[in-house]
Image (tube, rainbow, N blue to C red):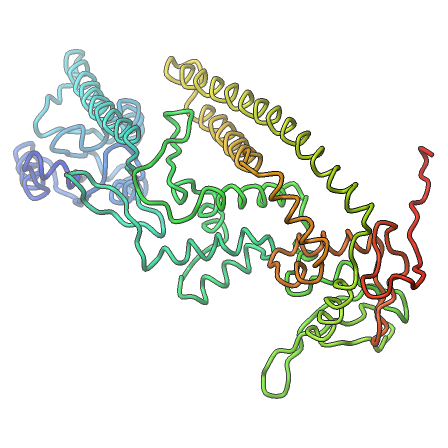
Length: 497
C-alpha cells in the first residue's frame, strides 16, 4: 500500500505567495511520515493552472492510480486547491478517487471523515472556487477596459509583436514577419490565386509550417486592418496599434472568400496571365483557345495561347505576339458619334439612379447590422443569467460575428464616394477612343474582360494569322476606314419578344 504526493504551483502563484514546489514536497513527506503512511511516487506539476484537469502530471498520476488499483490508498496535497480551484472538478475528482479506494489528504486543512469534516472540506473547495471566480472577474474587467481602449490583450498574431508603451503591453508591427501578411492579402485580393498557391508562395518566401487553416484565420483577422473583435462587445473596436493592411483590402478579401465558399467564383477562369482565354476561339476547329507555359531547353518558361482541342489542332501562338495583335484590333474600334452622345446621357442618368440605390442599400445594410448587434446583446444577457449555456452562446456568437463582418464588407463595397460626373464623362470619352491602351495598361483581369465583352459580345476567332470578329455591336465603328461596310451585330429576339 502506498500514498502518493501531488505538488503544483503556477509561476504567478509562486511569485505572489512565495511557496514553492520544494516546500510543498517536504511538508507532504513529513505528513506521510507522521501519519504512518508508506511514501509512493511523487508527481510535480510546475507552472500549470488549476482551472483544468488536462494537466500533464495530473493525468500521469491518474493513469498510474488506475493501473495500481488496490495498491494506492492515499493522495497527499499541500492544499486541496492544488488539485483544482473549480468546485465541480474537485468533487468529480474526489468521487473518482474514492471509487478506486483512494483518500485525499491535505497537509494544511482538516481531513476528518465525519459530517463536520466533510462540510469543512466542501467549504474549502467552495472558497477556492470563489477566490478563483473573483480573480477571473477582475481579470476580465481589466481586459474589457483594455479592449475598450483599443489594446489587444492576447497573443500577438503573425506580423505583430508585444512591446511596452506607457506601462501597458501592446502589439506593434513586426517588420520581419509583416511582409508575409501583406503578401497574403495582396495575392488574395487579386482573386487569381487559391489558398494553397498563397500558402506555397509564403513558404517560398521563408515562412515555415504554415497550414491552410492558419492562412484562413490570417485572412479573416480584423487586427490586420486596425480593428478588434471580441465576444464581449457587439461592434468592432478601433485599435491603437498600426494596421498592416488597409480596410478596403481586408473587406475585398472577405467578399472574395465569401463568394468562393458559396461557389460563386471559378478561380481557374480568372487567370490574369492569359486575359484572352474567355473570348478567343480557334478559327480552325471552333474550340476554345486557352493559355499555358512550357519549359524551354535552358529551363526558361515560355507562355503560349493554343487551341484546347484534343484533336491535335495546330493553333499555337506566343502570348506576347497574340496580345499585341489584339491590342491593335482594339485600337481600331471607337464609338459612333450618336452612340457616344447617347451613352453619356445614359451614364449621367445611371449615375443618379445608382447613387439613390446605394443610399437605400446602405440604409438597409445598417438596419441589418443593428438587428445583429441587438441579437448579440440579447445572447450576452442570456449567457450571463444562465438561460443559455456558454458553448451554445459561443456558436451563435460566431455566426453573428460572421454576419457582421459580411455586412461590414458590403458597407465598404457600397460606400458613397465623391465622384465628379464631369470628370467621369471625360474619362469615358478618353476610354472610348483608346480601348486598346486601357486594355493593355490595366492590371485588373475583370476590367480587361469587361472591355473585351463591350466591343466583342461574341467570341473572337483566331486562325493563327488574323482575327475574325464576326459580329460587332451596332454602336461601334472602325476608326481606320469609315467607308468599309461592316458585318453588324443585331440583337436576337428572346422569348419576351
